[in-house]
Image 1 (cartoon, rainbow, N blue to C red):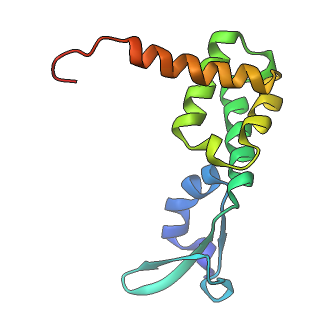
Image 2 (image 1 turned 180 degrees about the vertical axis):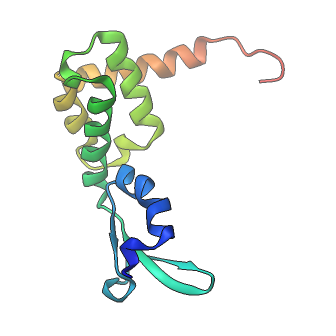
Image 3 (image 1 turned 30 degrees about the vertical axis):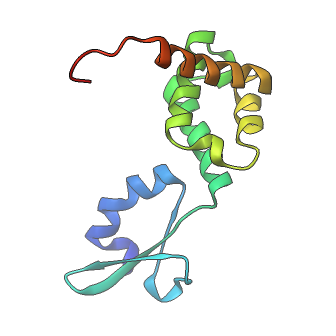
Length: 131
């Protein structure tokens, strides 16, 4: 039985796929890979993607979720996607704004406007006791 056939591999595969990672045999793991153990035995390794690759993977997943190219979505949905991407750290990646703008079919200026609008709305929203 290979590592990829192990129950742990089957359990974590959807998560690893969603992150854009790759499952590998523990013996093939490099220093940056994450080794997963099961009952004290190393059974699997995960090679995590580079941050820029993760952003491309996230954009592709959002496109699949919406069922069409992101550039074809309406403005409100694009704004929602920008908020989602911001919360996931997409704009901390080098050229993140440019990458997102290209995927959404808008300018970098528009992406910055979406980000600024969200920040402005948060500041303007009255705080409710208990928040």
